[in-house]
Length: 154
Image (cartoon, rainbow, N blue to C red):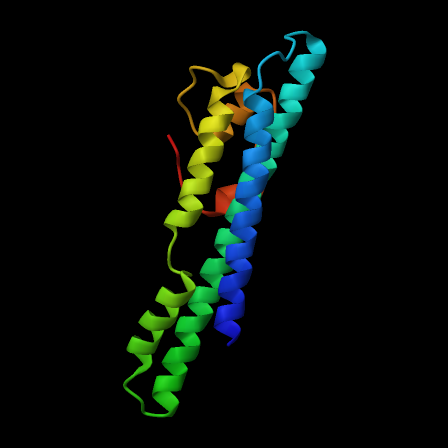
């Protein structure tokens, strides 16, 4: 039961992050934004929001991964203590039902954030990691969640 609650929590979190992304993407791609200093500041604030959104995706991924490891350890202990052989089947079934092992959900949101970030005027034409794009846009690199995944977009 707890596994399903965690799976639902992760699903709600991803839906919320996708919704936030759609809102900020619409704001970024809406034409008519003046290229004056104020327009540039608005764009930088939008890029900061995208950067924080990417950090939130990484944190949610880490939460999901940590709970997946915990599930495996609990079921391994269950199999050992009860001398049961259904642990691996139960693991596969629970992971499939909760989608906790599906990292592509997180990859999709992160890739969309990266594409939106690189479409912004300070980063247009740049083919680099999100960290480099942040620096090119005049933002500091994210500290924390984004670096702990070990994932590179370059």
